[in-house]
Structures are given as C-alpha cells and as structure tokens.
Length: 400
Ligand SMILES: Cc1cc2nc3c(=O)[nH]c(=O)nc-3n(C[C@H](O)[C@H](O)[C@H](O)COP(=O)(O)OP(=O)(O)OC[C@H]3O[C@@H](n4cnc5c(N)ncnc54)[C@H](O)[C@@H]3O)c2cc1C
Image (cartoon, rainbow, N blue to C red; front, side):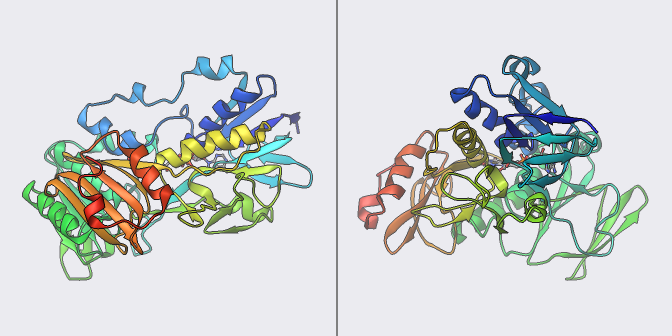
C-alpha cells in the first residue's frame, strides 16, 4: 500500500478543517498539507443549509468556502470522499479508506459531529432526514415542495430554523419537541413563549412536551405516533435532535476524550503533535469554563488558530466565539453562555423583537444575545471578559 508523508494532515473538510489551511499558510507557505474528508463536496458553510438556501438569499454555488483554485494555489492535497479509518500517534500515521498510510508531523482532528438518530421503532426508516450536510440539503430540497406536509422533530436551533424555512416554502409544517417552548434551553421563557406563539400564528402546528414513540411508512410518506396519542401523517420527516461529536478516531488512538476530544489552551490533544478544533474540541475557557461549542465562529476561529499553532505560533486560544441564527424575521447574534438557567435581563427597544438579552451569574454578564441588533458582538464580548459585577441600571441602554 502507498505510503506518503506530509508536514500537516487535517482530517475533516468542514469549517474547522478548511480554516486550518488558512492558519497554516499564514505562517508556513512551504510545508505540505493533506486535507482529507469523507464528504464529496468542496468545503462549504453549513449555516445556509437551514436558512439562506431556502429563502433564496443564497445559491448553492455561493456557500463554498473556497474554489478549487484556492487549494491548488496553496498546494493543498485535497482528498474528498475519503475517510480516515485509524490514527497511530506513536507512528505518526493516518490510515485511510483507500488503504493509504499517511505520515504527518502535525495532525488536526476536525471531524465535527454526526446527527443523533431517533432510538424508536422506525427511527431508521429510509427517507427520514437527519439533517447535517449539503447532500442532506439537496435530498430534502428535492422532496420539499409547496403543499406537502413536513414533520420536524426537535425544537432547538436546527429544528426551529428548518421548520421556518419549510413554512416559508409553503409546506404544512408540524413540530414536535419535548420542551414546553421552542429553544427553551437558550431563550428566557417570555421570548421562547412568544416565538412559539409566532410559529403557531404562521401556521406551524406545534406539539410541545411530547416526542414520537414510533414511525411507520404510510404510502409514500410516514405516520408518526407521539406519546400523547396523536398520529401525525407527513410526506417528509426531518429530525434535528442534536449531534454526537465524532471522537471515535481519537478514542481508538488512546487520546483523552470525554464530552469531545479534550484539548489544552493551545488546542493540543493529550498527544502534543495532534490538535483538535471545532465541534469535537472540548476546550478550556478561562471565563466561561471548559466547554465544547457547536457553532460556526468557534469552528472557524479554532480551526485557524490550530493551524497557526501547528505551524509554530504556539499561542493560547482565549477567544470567546459568537453564534447567530434566523427564525423568520427574528435574527440574532449571541456571545458567551446563552443558557436559560442563568438569570436574564432583557433590555428591549421593542419587546421580543429588538433589543439585548443579558445572561447573568452572580451579577456578572456571562452571555448576551443581540436580537435584531447587529454589529455589537465585540462590545458584548468585552463585557463578558471584564467579568465585573453590574446592575440592571448599568445594562439598560448599554448596547443598542
Ligand atoms: C444545518 C446547520 C445549520 C447551522 N447553522 C448555524 C448558525 O446559524 N450559526 C452557527 O453559529 N452555527 C451553525 N451551525 C453549526 C456550525 O455549522 C458547526 O458548528 C460547524 O459546521 C462545525 O464545523 P466543524 O468543522 O467542527 O465540523 P463539520 O462542519 O461537521 O465538519 C466535519 C467534517 O469531518 C468529516 N469527517 C468526520 N469523520 C471523518 C473521518 N473519519 N474521515 C474523514 N472525514 C471525516 C465530516 O464528514 C465533515 O465533513 C449549523 C450547523 C448545521 C448542520
């Protein structure tokens, strides 16, 4: 079997992996790079898959992070549709699904996550969309035509975004999720209630506090039965019930893992030549505590940072990433700990539409969500980094 050597190998052609190429090339223009990924498409942005591609704000051709020329110009050996099957830290090798043994000096694991599947009878029926990739988007888009019925399982970020997008495309949407309201883990109750009601007014049937217990085929569609007894007939089913980080390679190689691949502040795993970034990385964070983050800015900034460190920068990752979403006309950018278990103060200019929600712990700002308020992420981040006690009076009107 062929043996090849590279200065850098990156496993995963997602946001973190592709961003690592940029980080490496900032400091090292010569070292050879192998970027290897299981998906067949060129690296692309995931957020538009559940939003802009459905509203017409973007076309598929616009979501690729770089064109092929970028990889050629940067001398990246890009291998798409190839899976890394095993890594051997002692030998510094990666084995791939084509039987190659690939040697590295520095390795980045950027393998992202796999959608969780419904562990119920019928949860593995063909045609249920466990939505994550451009391939999944293309499949769903083909079947999601106006007038059809869609069941969206899950009331978190992906479920809520997809339900809005399908509704905008004139499908009859039903949502089922275990929480009392949409996005209740992130949003304060009053906002979560308001948004849930807003979805209802737009024609989405909401079945909250319930989950499916079985799914069966029903002609060309499906019938789902929920614990509360209702039967939901749907032409298509999409599930957005979270992801499991792809840590199997790291586990099998004996790297330290837990809720993700454990890295230090330089984004190094328990083996110093192997780094991890993006959705899989369990990262120390001085102010917010160690965590694994499943958001775009985290994948981009960690990927780039890991790339720079692999090329010798050796800098600690201290950045607090932000995230964003759009639910019909409700758009927001958020930074820090967006957790409805914290106490919150909502500084609305227009209630539930425009304003800033602060998430507080012991009177210190831990997170801020700017609702239809744009370009204020840096201000909010600075407030979190200050970690000083603040009063509601001090927060009122502070960011607008
Ligand atoms: C539909 C959708 C919408 C989103 N919207 C938002 C949003 O609005 N705002 C926001 O902040 N975040 C959003 N996110 C989250 C954000 O896109 C992710 O956090 C980000 O994509 C994570 O990047 P990553 O590179 O860590 O992992 P991924 O993008 O998952 O990439 C990992 C890659 O590794 C590959 N891989 C896995 N194992 C192997 C292997 N053994 N060998 C080779 N390749 C392998 C996978 O196939 C995949 O291509 C969204 C995510 C999705 C799915």
